[in-house]
Image (cartoon, rainbow, N blue to C red):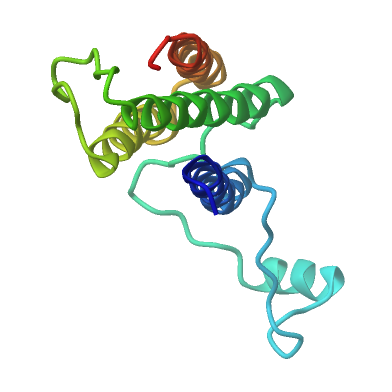
Length: 171
C-alpha cells in the first residue's frame, strides 16, 4: 500500500471515529435518545395518573432547574455543521503537516505540533463552547440563539480553515 493510500485510510478512520463519537453526543444533547424502563418497572399512563393523584410530588426548597431550551432544527443543523467544520480543519491540518513544506500557523501550537495536540485543542475549544451553551446558559431564555451563534461560528471558522488548509501548496 502506497504512502498516499495509507494517509487517506488514516483520515477515513479518523472521520469514522469522529462520527462514532459525535452521533451519540448529538442524540444525547438534543433528546433524541430515549431511556426505557424494563417492563417490570414500567406502568401504564392510567396507573401513573392514579399514583400521581394518591402521592403527589413534594415541593422542594431548591429552585427549579430546567433542562434548557428545546432544540430547534437550526440548533441541530449548526451543531452538526460545527462538528463537520472542525473535523475538516483538523483533517486538512494533519494532512498538510505531513509535508515538510507546511507549518502550523497557530503560534500556540507551534510550527509542527503532533496529532494529539491538534485534535486535543479542537476538542478543548469545542468542549468549552458546548459547556457554555448547554450548561452555563441552561436557564437563559436566549439559549437557542446562543446555540446558533456559537455553533455557527465554530462551523464557519472550521470550514474556512479547512478550505484554506486544502488550498495550500505544500508540495
